[in-house]
Length: 216
Image 1 (cartoon, rainbow, N blue to C red):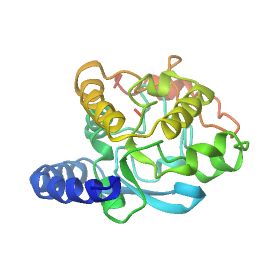
Image 2: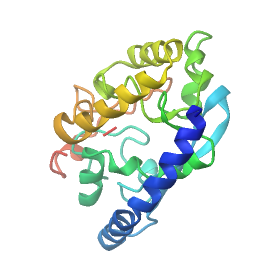
Image 3: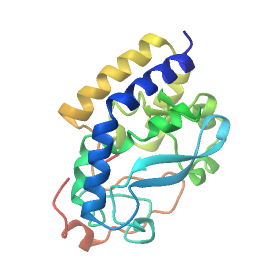
């Protein structure tokens, strides 16, 4: 079976198994704060094709226009309580199963980035766009946001060059360990995640003091 065939088979199975957890998460999000259940955003996929990614909303509605914009920091005041838990366990990524069924993503592949980030790539860095992006990646299980963007992209390119079913299985198994046990790399070491290719917004002191410690 091809990788695409495996993606479709697993995603259909997961939609059935996760239907109840999906409903419970949706209810919790709606009960805590105003706004939609899902967060949608344009991302760059294979060969730079733009698609809309789906996630469970973990921040207050309109968060991109507040605080650090697209950047997120540890203890960010825009993150809701249920959002903090979803981020810590990477459960906010689960709706991307719909992106997999649609053919925009795979379970394993370089994480899909913002379009302005791709515009800043050089020719070498654009190689990470040679395959479908994934819910999890080689970089995600080897440091995630603790890594610099340059290191993450190099890991993505290494994955492209060594693509195999066995490597995907290794990443999937390691993802469960990282997501539910170590929770490594949810945030960068300085507490605020970088935004590749864009000016960094200054860290607002107030955002780190109004929310307990809790990414991506």
